[in-house]
Image (cartoon, rainbow, N blue to C red; front, side, top):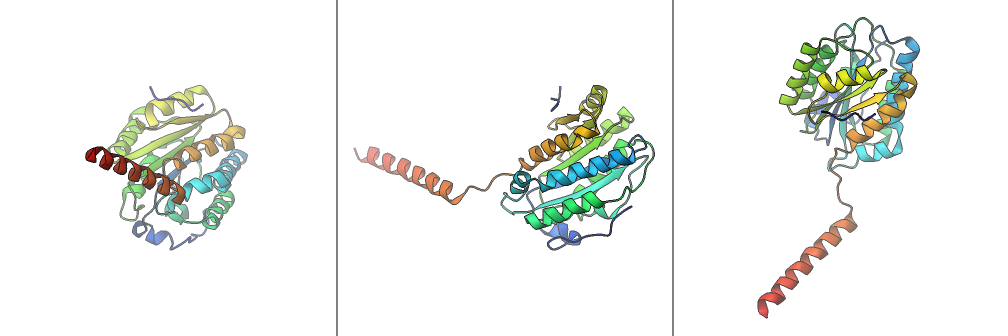
Length: 250
């Protein structure tokens, strides 16, 4: 059983630009899959996007996102309602500095709602998977799909989308908004076997939950040892070698 952890904007270019995302090695490819169905009011949509923006503005999260070998991550956002919607945020943005992350956060904060309708979670997941693994997808094997929403959809279709992601090596995490039944649906149908569900009791709780989840996802980036740590490791290995040499000469 998976654990519970209780207007389209114009394209923006960060670093070398989203058109070249597949040519730039990154430490994480992250797709934000965002529910904009009719059950979400205008004010709740604003709380969602503000929550994402504040998470990316968090200095601790920024440090983790930039702490890998390549010092960069690729992030996009896919919106879904009755189907997957097409916006400028489909394209992956390379975030390779605090300034680039702040600019992406500002884009999320100001991004107009691209549509509304029913709740088709697998449509959003399938589109995100195609973008993550497609020819213009991030140059990394560390791929995460981050699905958030306040409703359920066909269990059969959602499980099929989840299984396709898992087969492609993509981790799917979920942020379930509202009742415990939504969290249960996400646990049973949305997230992969190595994924997590972070519940938000309401949209007022969304910022806390999304910050927690993105911090967990940023922690999947292997940390580059600081120079002092490398020196200590080298000294330790040297000491082991000297002791072995002395033992051999006794």
